Image (tube, rainbow, N blue to C red):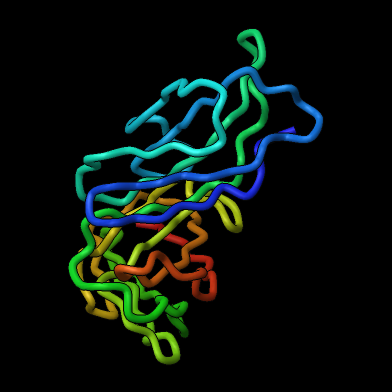
Length: 188
């Protein structure tokens, strides 16, 4: 059983993580995992002892995908829920990002792809995150922050294949739920 209810708060460059202990798995310590994309460990993989909260400071600006695992005698539990933590976003959190709507794509010769979408209802976004996978809901092929508030994205030279694509809005409050998912086939 995994730790539950991973939650976080961000104050400037300080991140506080909190979670609940697993009910079946007896934890002797916890490991915090963080990556630059979902499921990755390229930012942190740290054993923090037998506590159910952790404060990290100073944390460099960026977007972190964070999970916690309970440990017992070198055996790790399943991962907790994954939290998307944004540090150093410009501006204060004034309203959550709303999911974009109406995602569509066009594919032209040589794998040149244009994605476009509409603003989510009442959304206050600073950029968008495009996710692509090899099956519905997956992000195993791409997670790209557009670093722009533009509602279109051009990707030249995309390789042949079938892609399941969605987009999320991002602002100082976090990342929205996903837009509609489209299935895009690229054949050169």
